[in-house]
Length: 193
Length: 432
Ligand code: HEM
Ligand code: FES
Image (cartoon, rainbow over all chains, first blue to last red; front, side, top):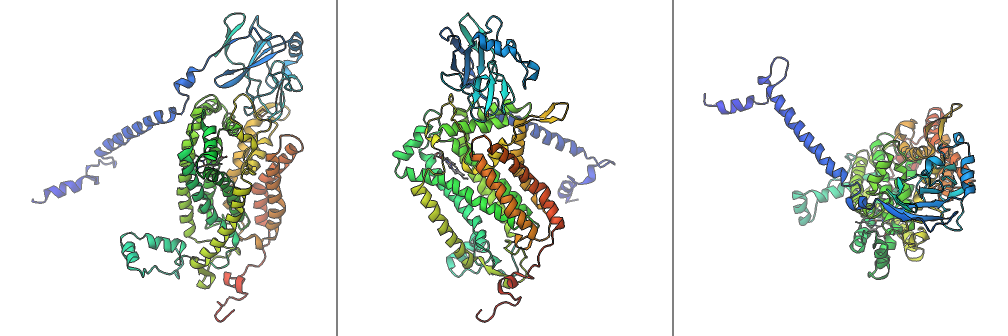
């Protein structure tokens, strides 16, 4: 017949190639092609999403070294770690005693002072200066700032009070001030991060 | 779609005829906002606010694109570049004040537009889709305005960014990594500022797209009206042009007088003075407040001071911080469900005695209390007041509205818009 060309073409995509259960041989190649394209499309999400994460220069600033020899008992300083404030406080014996006198079970975020400091350096309370409520910088590290009802830190934003172990005692914050990873490399040098 | 009596576009000018044949844009405009679009004859001034919102969007895009020509999105220089716009760029002060106050007035307009919708139940069938798109536009506006406020990189910019991205940190498990990912760092910094600028530039155009869908959806059933009675005959309508182009033009004039009074005479009244202090990551302002248009929602966020626990056992289910975040987002998400929460067949509050009372003496005072508490420090009595108002707010939408719509006896509705306007169903013929 002279019209074979069109007739063969019109057979494509019709059910002629289908076996009894309605599955065509061509289905396989269609599903495989769409799946491969789908996997490829999903893979492009990886760079699109991860470009938003901290870049290498931001991550490179992720340790801070501090000399704490100048901080007298009862004093505190604010340092910067990952562009956020860190409080380094040299606790007085009275403050340590006050922190240890608290019934840990009664705390919102139960932790002892010992768990929040390093052995042999129990007088050094090193915490992030970032309120665990919504991230304000609490007051109390600098001279003359209010230290709240529990003698530690006070966040003025929504009124969170922290005690002398920087544990949350009153107000909306859910957790104690975070203790960052740090080590004493010498008796007076701390590396945070 | 339009009503069968809508006038057809007949170009008289040969240039327009040529144009219309090749690309029917003139026809499109004529049918959308011209004489070819019949609208209810009784639309009040409350129906001006849609056009005003559109005007504000154009205003923000024009002034914003100009600001972007002079602004530098870099944490080291952003603050100074805004001062450079204010002091050195020709007319830069006008562009910035027009943009900053334009954002405020955009929200004034949109709040009136939304509350018009609440009172006249504009969300009811057949206009649900218009309403849903509207709520999406409002959410996009909030995101845009929030990111815009970060750009000048003052103290409120920085701390606002910190507090708002901190909200995401409340989400269990993924919260903290999500927050770091959003900021591109551990605190707001250059990475965050740059992406906020990019998105602040983009989102208004996304809003413009959503506005097109909003109006497209509106033109299918056409505008509702103060009686809530649907259009029945030609005498219920008037062509949009010249009747409502004139009415909207007048409203625009009034709007511009008030807006310009702020731009020229009170340009910083609606802003916060702390935003003229450069961002300082080590010192929090004594009292962080968002821009005024976020106050009601900020009050809801802060109303949750206690954790949700299982009584007696003391097992914490949801911490207070997360509760506040969920409530704040739900306060807007609940609007999505309004078409199905308010089942009364009558639309307009004018014919719903009980609904009207709860609107004027329940919802409106509640919004004002939330607004006032959101701008106040987190102390008593504001905390208690926000808690009461938050409780009423949710009760209004989730409990009171459904109950009202089943027990209320609406007043008698006019049989048509024409009757409501003329006191008779017969179209006016002779001089009326
Ligand atoms: C939905 C529309 C928009 C809203 C609600 C909005 C809102 C805002 C707000 C609240 C600010 C802070 C103003 C201040 O305190 O200085 C701002 C700043 C800015 N916006 Fe927009 N904006 C919109 C559209 C745009 C567009 C389309 C662009 C650019 C294409 C733009 C570019 C800028 C720039 C460069 C700044 C920083 C300069 C400044 O702070 O004055 N905006 N925007
Ligand atoms: S951020 Fe500190 S109490 Fe809210």
